[in-house]
Image (cartoon, rainbow, N blue to C red; front, side, top):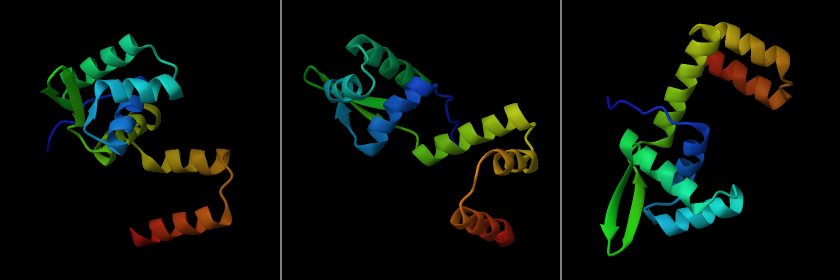
Length: 122
């Protein structure tokens, strides 16, 4: 299986733009993030370059424009981030994490029912 790169919160924001629609030229990514994050174009270009170096993004040059596309799936990144969080915060054990969130967050009856269904299916 391909190694999934660790991506920062800011890089995750860039990846979400491209997971929603790609390939995109840098100018479209910059425009999207200027509106939602109020980031300077140089900030976005720096993040794009980091993601390319990490292997999370690829690009193709067409004339003067660079078109970017994800090389890793969102679900794979979510799995890697979840596993890293679980290992870092809860020592890799799922039970204390579930107990923590069930105690600290109010689950709706629908969410409780779905959680029970998932646990019973295992």
